[in-house]
Length: 204
Image (cartoon, rainbow, N blue to C red; front, side, top):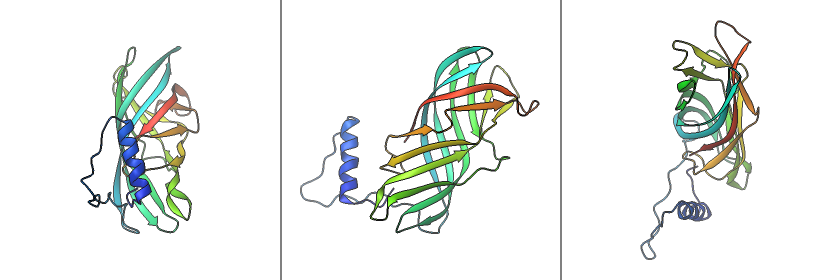
């Protein structure tokens, strides 16, 4: 989301204002151009910042938790007119603390094949708004169960049909299409050990 028109620049300035920042443009000077997207047909890595609020159902109890972290994705293809980027998950690292299960961390399960993530313009006329479909299999470790890496049973799908920024993102909210994530213990494949239910997911 880096090729920016004056309309996008205005949008970015409005967002900054909402976030409490006051931008200053010197006189009639031309603003510095915003960063450009991944070059067409050239691989690159995209890093996103994730904040997710969710419910954890484990052992008959339910808790509401918040986790923060980052995800890295490899851009494997991109086009212009209409703009689109195809990316695959490389690494995921966000964490938090559960009152009953202790510290938890997440990752990507690279052993499971996932569909490619695609971010593309809604129309050929402009880069934004765009639609993003993000696919991955997350893993979770819990300090209450050391040595166990729980893996999502179903492929996860995050979606945003009205993206106004990408790489980097500016306060974009995504929805978990599946509504919930069931995790399995590797020693009991297919059996749900616990469930995460997403409430909000913000990617910056």
